[in-house]
Length: 315
Image (cartoon, rainbow, N blue to C red; front, side, top):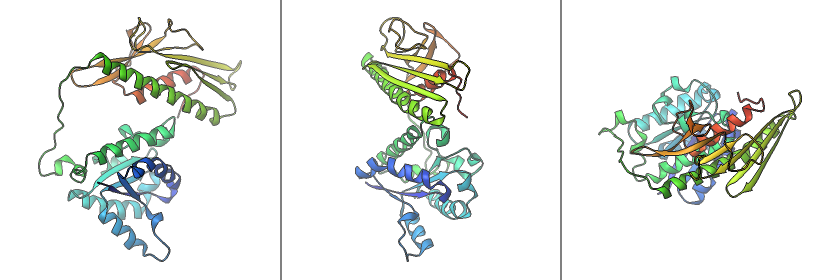
């Protein structure tokens, strides 16, 4: 089944629309989605009628939510209100994509699961491509749920039968845990590589370096020339998968550090339902970070620890 996606956006956010369209390329090549927005309207076509026809036949309504979107009478009061009516009938799935910080939680959008993860605005991600990947991954999960796509669009309280999530208790073997360590290391390596390029382009006072040391280790350096004496930060990350005393993903704030040193680690753990990641500081002593993390969240957490050492913060 090819899911038809209607993209609703403010023209002030056309740059975001362009990036989303590029990130949707694989979903479209795989025949899983067809995406439509008002740029597809041809000269001479009736604008309102064309939009209404597409909205009335779409399976998914993706709204690029920003302050400009919420302030737009047409986006909010025409397109979104029409989508809400179809959603209440069980005919449409509404997916808010949060573009920038705005008062969306005071709107009806707050009833729907937002993307990227946890409704964190795209503008607040260190690497915007990571945010768009999270959006596309969420949409892929949604269309993979076909043929129950439309029923999934209705808030549980409005469906004929209550929707309850089923969780199965299970055990995880050493291979599954090692696979998560590998996935986490790969996510960190890719995140650090992209974020280093992004950070260097943010200011002429910042220089960055990223280098793969081996298939299981990488190192990075930041030089902040805005600080007297050129404040530096270094990090080396090793994928140890539980070998030795330094956990699964070990990190040390030195360049080209050996595998037998550590300032802390990212641990693969499990409860009765899921595998997840936690932070251990200083030779396995648990710190204040008790969040159950995904590989992407762990990469973001460690990058933030790294850049702070160079006197860099993100707004």
